[in-house]
Amino acid sequence: MRNILLLSLAISVGFHLLFSLSAFFGDTLFFSEPKPMPHKHFNFLRVLAFTACSYVMVFCVFLFNRRMLRLSFKKSYIRLIWIVIGSLLITAAFSVFFNCFPIWMDFIEPMPGFMPRVIRNGLVKDFLLAAIVILIVQLLKTMHERNQIAVENEALRAENITTHYEALKSQLDPHFMFNSLNTLQSLIGTDAEKAQSYVQELSQVLRATLQNKEVVTLEQEMQGVHAYCNLMQIRYGDNLKFDFQVDQRFMSCLVLPLSVQGLVENAIKHNVISGKQPLQVSITTSSSGVLKVSNPIPPKIMEETGSGIGLANLAERYRLKWNVELEIMNDGKIFEVILPLIDSKE
Image (cartoon, rainbow, N blue to C red):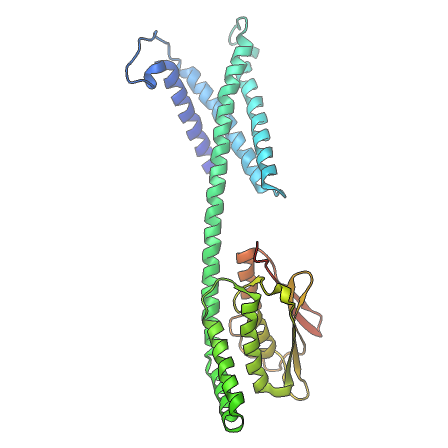
């Protein structure tokens, strides 16, 4: 409110100062060689009254514009139309009132043709003021949106850096590396071909973790997911199974790096995996353009500490990047996370 008051005052004073100088000095304001002009009487109180009236009008137009910017519209141009029409109507009402008020109160005696001339000239001047206000509001709105986008992009960049860092810590965690090397050692003595495949899958997982991209295609993400799932399946054997039903037509869609892999990691980390209670993780797509990662419950009795790639982190990253929300379903038997797939053409 304080900024609107000061901006309204600055516009009113600046406009009427320029208007008064132009009326007083005439062409000498715009030409280097002064021309002889008849002497004009400068009425300071009249200029001050006009400035005060314009200040009230400009302030009301600013308030109306601010109110319209806070309302939601399906189309941005509809808001702009309402702003222009509303601002002009407010300006016309104030202009007629302020210009006719001295006559209504018998402060001045109108001459023939005085009323139409005053209203016409006053409307032209006030409409020009309204146009200035609208332009300033749209300029400030554009600057605010750009700053907001810059802030959100910076926040997303920070979230991505944190996610990559935490993912790298997770994959290079001594527990993860110990299990991976133990599995590799057991394979070397029994199945050299499978051990070589295991090394390739492990390198693929680490490569996916180290990539520095803001977005990836679903195809690129699934390459890392398959590599990670192969590692986990070698470790847990038949106690861990994966069901992939990903439609090829969605492979060009965009997702955030480590999003699907992070959901698979959480499913493995927070659920029982044993011969009595095997775990099956399902990764499927639906015709509505979403990807679902689901697994049965119950959770582990002894919960492991999260790696930092949690649902809250993932949901925040999606909100910042594309302004979309994740859906989390938990009916006590099945835990499911629905991940939006972003069309690469958008």
